[in-house]
Image 1 (cartoon, helix red, strand yellow):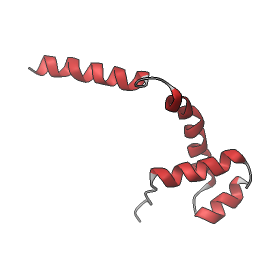
Image 2 (cartoon, one colour; image 1 turned 135 degrees about the vertical axis):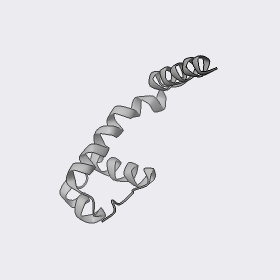
Image 3 (cartoon, one colour; image 1 turned 30 degrees about the vertical axis):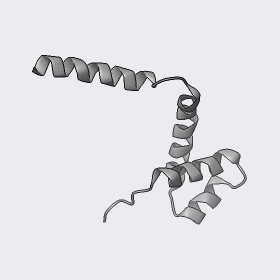
Length: 77
């Protein structure tokens, strides 16, 4: 059995609904056919990543990855 892939807009929609607490996580899970733990995980990811939306420039992690990539390309040639 293959795992179901959900789009980013779908995840955001479900996570936002969970954050607003207009419906319980159990109701959301039944409505969208997603496991409770998955909804909770998406909600946590949304809370952790929302500051990046309003920050200036690239997030620190992206800058670090680009610096590492540039250094590795220099080593390769």
